[in-house]
Length: 153
Image (cartoon, rainbow, N blue to C red; front, side):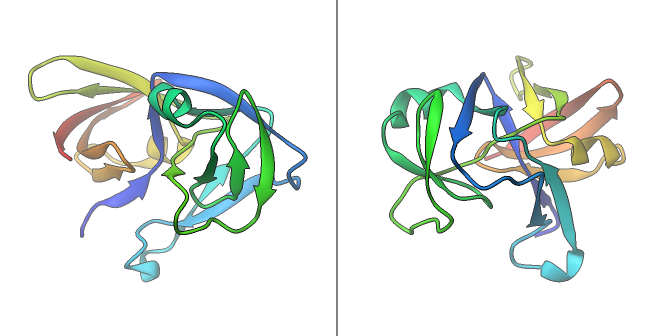
C-alpha cells in the first residue's frame, strides 16, 4: 500500500468527449484506501483525451467509465452519458493535456513508451508508483521524460 496511483497510457489513441460539462481539472486521491495522503490534480481538456489503443479497439461503441470522471459511449468523438460511473461498466484510465512522456523498462529489458499525467514529473527518483491498470514501477529518472522500471502487475 505504499505506492500512490497515477494515470498513464501506453499506445495512446486520441478521443474527445462531446456535450459533457466543461471541466478543466479533476481531483483524484493519491491512494483510494488512504485519503489522508492527499489528492492530485489532473488537467482535463474534453477535446484532447488519450486512452489505451487496446481499450479503444475492445470497447468502441460501448459505455465505459473514464476513471474519476464520468461515463461515455466510447468513440473517436465519445458521447457524454452520465456523471455516474456504473459498477457494471468497464473503467479505463485516461490522460489529457498537459501530459508527460514516459518510458517503462520491462524486466526483460524491453521498453514501453507512453504518456502520463503531469504529476509524475513532481516525483523524486526511487519513488514507487502504481500506474493504474498497468502495474507497479519505480521512478528511475525525472527529466523531459520520466523513466520507470516495471516491477509487477
